[in-house]
Amino acid sequence: MESYGLVLTKEGTQYSVEGDWRVVKQQLEEYFSTPGNIDFAKIIAAGSRGIIELVCEKFDMPPDRKKALREFEITQIVPFGLPEYEVSFAIEVKFDTYTMIHPDANNYTEDHINIISENSSGKDRYLLHHLIRCMVTPSHEVLHFVQSALKIKDKSEQSWCLEHGASFPSLSLLTAVNRAGLAPEVFSPGLVEACLVYFHATVKNM
Image (tube, rainbow, N blue to C red; front, side, top):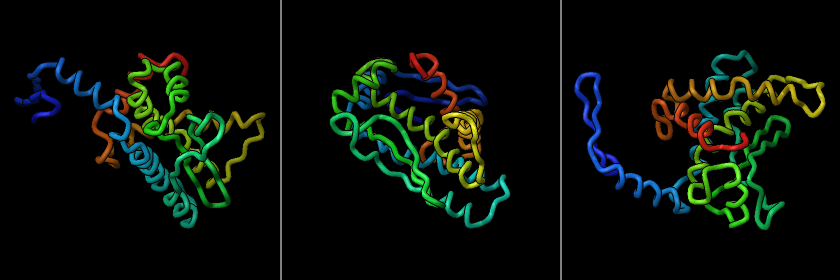
């Protein structure tokens, strides 16, 4: 199998790779430095909807709530804050209508790139950084939809209990989505673990 100039071969359980890594590095750097190559909304949908499917299978809740969860919407953030828009993820819950709101790094201005680069590996890799954000961050946000559907209340100041509740299982559920093959168009074996290694190695403030 050939990919990005590398040839992957398998003999039994052993894999070997042949090729020039310098060529691969150059190709990847070019790919991740060009806005428009990545459909971030598709990546967000894959992980988030996979988690919703797992939750709907495991939790006992009325069919109409499961239907509402499965039909949650994904939309780009409305312009505010900086010259065009913020760089944060957010959610909106209106009765039984759920919306995931996200920034699209393909449209970042120089100001946005500078903000992202403060906590990542540099301005030349901000698209790669955002790609991984789109895999990891929505796994937390989508669990707020589940909390709402289950009518979970939070009496703590600033809703820290709900935040903790959405944070603790999020990456485990994302890993389960990956391993269950619920989003094969985006995820591949080991991808979530690779994202976490990236964050640990490059992000200054998580």
